[in-house]
Length: 130
Image (tube, rainbow, N blue to C red; front, side, top):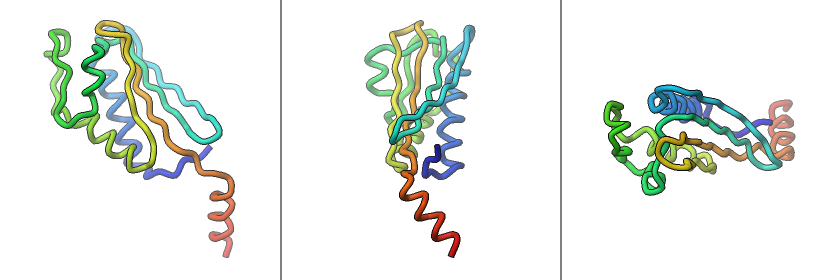
């Protein structure tokens, strides 16, 4: 189940999402799951942390945006991490998004990247064999 991606850039995206989950989860748990369908690989990073309001979810991936509520005031950051993550994932023809049932109810961040299709993999293997 391969995806065509720059390993370091995707590592940066996943590190950012995991670090945010850690930063915004003072108690509870964080889980990471990976799933596949015919065309995509999908990673989900879920936490039981502060959660995100519906309005906050709309702006999460904007440059310099930071969730502003009393529960997160102690957490510092530049507001660039999720913006950069979106830029990287978009450049890989993927999608990144967040879901939360609201403040205090945790969050789920998803990264979806296109898989290498078998015909492409076979062609690349043939090129390497030459």
